[in-house]
Image (cartoon, rainbow, N blue to C red; front, side):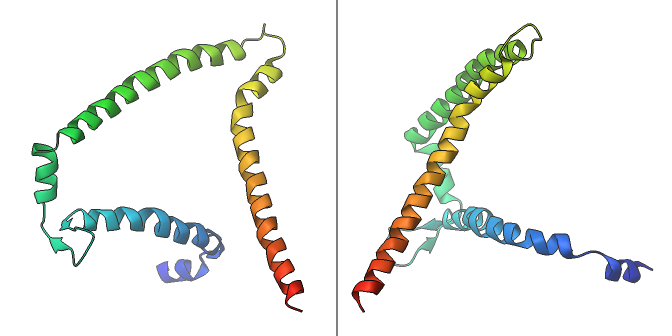
Length: 145
């Protein structure tokens, strides 16, 4: 009964998701695992890395003053950055969802415009870059004739 259900299972969604899974593993999971592996090595940049175990972490936690300072600054940025962001964002969202406000769509578009602008600028950059590369290749082919 179970084998019959496995044979009848629809495999198409997994096939369509496989490029995403492969890219995710390649660019997210692999670098995390590899950096974890490297963190247990002593490496000078030249020669073979030497396995030192947890001594890198012990040195980081006991001797490195810059680590604790950067950790404190990151904590402050997290607390004050998110606190101020939410102090402004939540009342603004409540205000924009009020029925009494006119031109709500205009205000929502104005707040969302920076996100779309950055995406469009990256798209234009990619189009210009690709077209430049393609044009250079075409010119080289024509010149070599």
